[in-house]
Length: 107
Image (cartoon, rainbow, N blue to C red; front, side):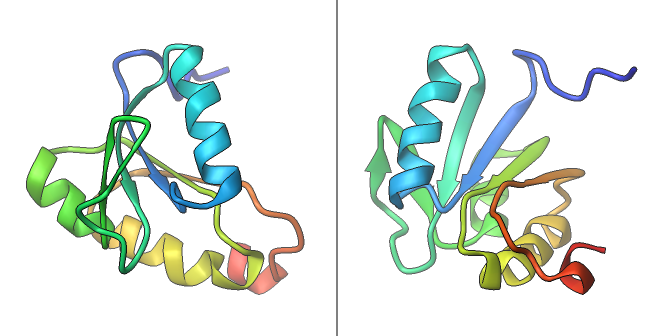
């Protein structure tokens, strides 16, 4: 089995300013995950738990350099619209967390 994440991977949290995003970011950092940025449209310039927040994944990559993984804590209806900009920004692995994601959006 391949190991996709370790302490060297740079992680972006999409939806970091929401309840789940904030709570999971705290837990990920406690376990040693290298969370380097967060994204919530319209909330760029803020900071959550010491993590800088950007408006879009491309802004985070432009500011911080390569990001390896994006984890999405967004409502199911917005998963596709959140994942595509992360992929377009060159992030190779996206982790989709929400329930009830439409099948065709996940494929």
